[in-house]
Every structure is written in C-alpha cells, then in structure tokens.
Image (cartoon, rainbow, N blue to C red):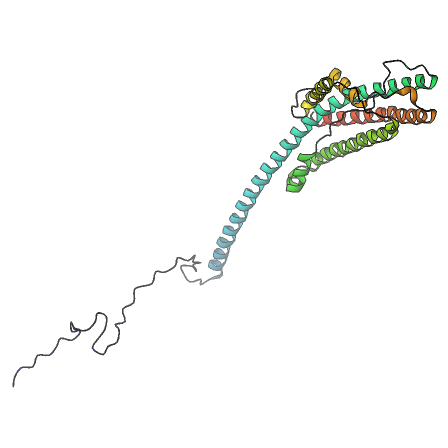
Length: 291
C-alpha cells in the first residue's frame, strides 16, 4: 500500500488567510488586556484566630486613621494661621494710613472752624451795613474719607474668624467710629451747603490763568491721598476753598438771608467741635491699638 502523507496536526495550509483555519473561522487570538491599577485594601496577612489578634488589627487601623486626621488638621491650622497673619497685617497697614488721614483731617477741620467763625463776623458786619472790600464767606471744606477696604476684605474672606476675638473687637470699634466720622462729616457739609444756597457763587470776572493755577493747586493739595507720608499745605488749601466759595456781593443780602446764613454757620461751628471730639476719640483708639 502506498504511503499516504498525513498533514501534521496543527499546521495551517499556506493558502488560508492568516488568522483563519480550514473551516474558515477566525483564530481566537486576543491581545492581553492591561490591568488598571487600583488601590487595594488588604486583609490581614494571617487569619485572625483570637480576640487579641482582632483588637490588634483594629488598633492599627484606628491609629492610621487618627494620624491621617491629625495631619489634615495640622495642615488646616497652619493655613488658617497664615490667613489670620495676613489679615492682621492688612488691617494694620490700613489703620496706619487712616491715622495719617485723620491727622490731616484734624488740621483741615481746625481751619474750617476758623473760616466759619470768620463768616459769622462778616455776617454781623453785613447786618450792620459795614461790609469790608475783602469780606468773604468761606464755606467750602475738604474732607478725605477714612478707608475701610481691608476691614471688608477680612470679613468677606472669612479670615476674621481666625483672629482672636479681643483683637477683632478692637478693630470693630475703630471701624465703627470711622464710619460715624465719615457720615458726620458728610452730613455737616451737606447742611452748610443748604444754608449757603442763597449765595450766588458765580464769578464772571475770574481770570482764566488764575483759575487754572488754583485748580492745579487743588490737585496738589489732594496728592496726599495717594501718598501716606505727605500733608495738605494749609495755605494752598485755604486759597483753594476761598476760590471755590466764590465772592458774591454780600451787601445785597436781605435780613432774612443773613438770618439763614447765621444759623447755618453757627450750627457749623457747633458741628466742627463735635467732629473734632470724634477725631480725638478715634486717635485714642488708634494709639491704644498700636501699643
């Protein structure tokens, strides 16, 4: 009998497409999947056969959790302490700037009170008909608001919760007093403007060059707002407020107008004294804080 050559088992004839067998089915060749790394929680390496081993295992877990919580709390404490330090520095810097503004406001307030007392003397002469050529009613005054930006930032950021209560209470009293002074200064000036509304402050004969010079002087007087080390030049400021108040013809004032102006300037003098006392009280709060 002739030898019949049997094909070797497992061989695939060359005329079949790669990856297929004699039956036309695809070979089940699948590339291995890459496992995604996972965080495993391991069970004890040995079986727990006693209560002692169980409690040791529980204690190890508890200590690990406790250490993690302590570390998290420590990081939070350091962050809050840094926040509180930054907030206190911010408040202190603003208080330093406000203290310089306050000193300038006290000087300007004294000058404004002098102008108001001089105005009362002018009105007495106007009532008697003895007006002088240089008589003028100066009622314009300058006031720079005390800032509270840092206080608002500290509250809105929540950093104030990490500052000791006693410190925040002292800052709270300071900023409350500042707000009262800002409101009082605005109210005093608004009342005086109402009383002097009978005056016509238009000046048709003002020399344009002189007007420009006075405007530049006013800008120079305001420069201390951006520079915390300078002070307003009182001579320049007096000339500026004098120009802004105008020079109406006081001889044409009626008795009723004079009465109204006198009441306004008398109230202004009283308000100047009240505002000055508020200035002194705030300055004492600043001094107590910086001790």
